Image (cartoon, rainbow, N blue to C red; front, side):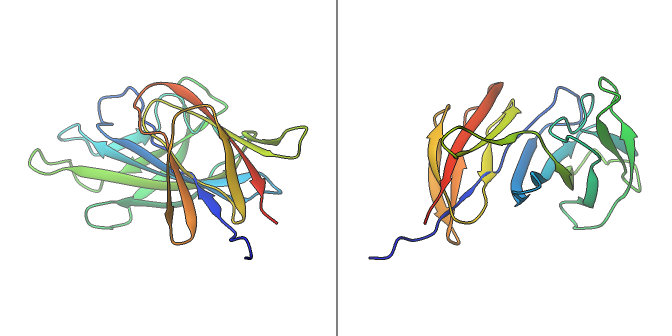
Length: 190
């Protein structure tokens, strides 16, 4: 029987301690393993009624990025409408970047306003150990799920995870909401 190639899916949930982030979830995909590039899709609930803009993620910025962040999309999740945005320096880490998002109109008090931001950047959080296994690490305060490159199998997790398969890809989820550094090791299937 020929072995199946399985990719591991890493989707992370991140929330930061600011009032407008009632939810925080992030889907992380390794888009270029050789160059150590990941894309991350973050979703936040903007909770300040009357606000016309917000900065995401504030105050630390996209701290996974080892260089400039490329913004792929910024939308309001309920409508799918594109939102205006600009890159700004992070408040607590001037070397990191945030996205300042214009909501278009003040946030009403009678319906949720969710912002979804997809960015891509090179990261230093992808390495290889002495046995040639890929090591992916990410620090988060909430539940996390990840998407790994095609053909990788999960062989180690430093945290309890749930594993499932969707569209031929494994999903690896650490559902506990607590500050943690997640470390996953994978190997390429032959």
